[in-house]
Length: 376
Ligand SMILES: Cc1ncc(COP(=O)(O)O)c(C=O)c1O
Image 1: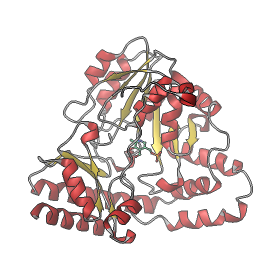
Image 2: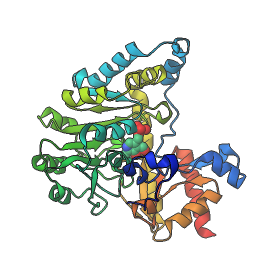
Image 3: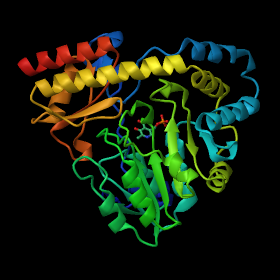
Image 4: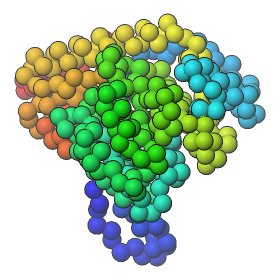
C-alpha cells in the first residue's frame, strides 16, 4: 500500500523516494508502555502479540552464553564457523549452503539487495509478514500483490502473476498471521512454473511447530536441483531466542556466497553463536518446548472455537481467529486489562485477532481475561 509522499524539504529531499513510501513496521504493543498507561505492574502484563516463545530458555543455552562473557573483547570467528557447520549438519547440507544472520529478518532485508534492480518485480501476499514488502520497496521493486485465498497462498494465482521480471516470490510457511502452510504439491507446481531466475523464498520461521505431513520441505527441492529455492529459518521462535537475534538461510552455494558478500562480516555476536550451538545440541529441550506449543495451540483453538469464533487451523505458535466483531476494539479492551494480542486489521482482517501461544499458565490467564472482557 503506498502512502502519499509529501514533497520533501531541506535535507529530507536527499532521501530516496522509494524509501519515503515504505510504511513503518508496526510491532506488537510494548509491555512497558502498556504497564505505564494502565498502571498495571510490568510483571503482570501478558504479551501474546509477537509470536515469541515464553517456554523457559534451555539451561544449556544460558550456561553457554555466560561462558562467553570473559571472551567478549574478541571477534567471534571460531564459533561463527562452528555454528555454520552445526546448522549445516543439522540439515544434512554442506557448510557452503548456509548463511548465518542476526535474525532471519536481516536476510529478508538482504535478499532484495541481491536480486532486484529498480523495476524488477516481486510477488507477495498482502496477508503475510510485512517485512517482505518493505525490504522489496527499499530496492524500488515493483510489488505484485497476490492475496491469500481461504487464508492460504494462492499458488495458481502466483503462477499466473509470474513474469520474466519476477525476481522474488515471497512465501511464508507457516504463514504469519494465518498459520497455514504451503504443501509439497503446491511448491512443486510453483517451481515447475517459475523461471530459473526467480528466487522462491520460503520463510520457515515457524517450521519446527509444523505437524502436517503435507508440509513442503524446501531443502528437499534444493537437493533435487532447484537452485532457486531459498529457505529462511530462525532461532527466535522454536528455540525461544528472539532476543539473541539469530537466523539463517539454506540455499544454493552461489546464493550463499553472494549473501555473505553483502553482509557485515562480524554480524553475529559471540553470545548468539554460543547460544545457537548449545540450542542445536539440546534436542530434549526442543521436543519439550514444541510439545508445549502444540498443547497450547490446541487449547487456544478449542476454547476460542467454543466462543463461537472461527479459528484458522494453525501450524505455527499462534492462532488467528475471526471474532465476528471488531478485532481492534477487542484488542483495546484486552489491553486495558494488561493483555496484549495483535489486531489483524493491518492484514485486512478487521474482525480477527492473532494470539501467540503462551505457557499453559499464560494461556489460561488469557482465556480468563478474554471471557471477562466479553462478559462486560
Ligand atoms: C514470518 C516471519 N519471518 C521472520 C521473522 C523474523 O524473525 P527473526 O527474529 O529471526 O528475525 C518473523 C518474526 O516475527 C516472522 O513472523
